[in-house]
Length: 262
Image 1 (tube, rainbow, N blue to C red):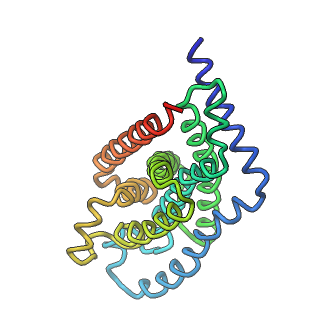
Image 2 (image 1 turned 180 degrees about the vertical axis):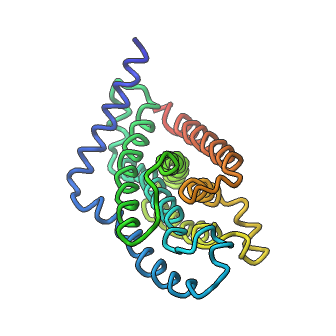
């Protein structure tokens, strides 16, 4: 019976998030704008430049650069969606909505999990749109089980980034501080990962940083699936899963510390 109450509480919080989302009809449009710009500005520009190189296929696993960056843009989209969905917690803090939720007869942890499930639903829609745009722009993507597994990887990474965003929101509490911090965090995460170029081609310092960048492992697994390479996919997936479990655990711990006494 307690499990049923718990799942009902999660659903209640998730439905609340959906109602707020539907009031902002431009949410999906805004979320998909950045991936489109990456495809158009970087994808086409670099595709023309790299097409003159005879080694591109050997280095990247495909001669189509747009195909190569699809996993990177896919994971970047989920990273941004996850981080800022988790950071949205700060809006509830500043409007006292969190106090209203805490005053309700619901399991406290369901607040965090309900928000997470909504973030995954929203991100799933963005993932599908990114893949459709990529195919339209000429990316060579099969619709086999590998692509579906890449989508699963993106959702797992979204959960990890949601947890990070939620922790930042719960600790900093200031709207300006939270979004400034995440805005600064985005750039180094993207450009010290393998999202746009193989880590092997980076300077040694950046290559070393890429090995501790969680974005790298998510991109590598998704790329292994989409390009059907399966190079170290199992190891990358294991590292990604461990990171996600740790991040989720930390977010739940911080939530209990911050709000169980209220």
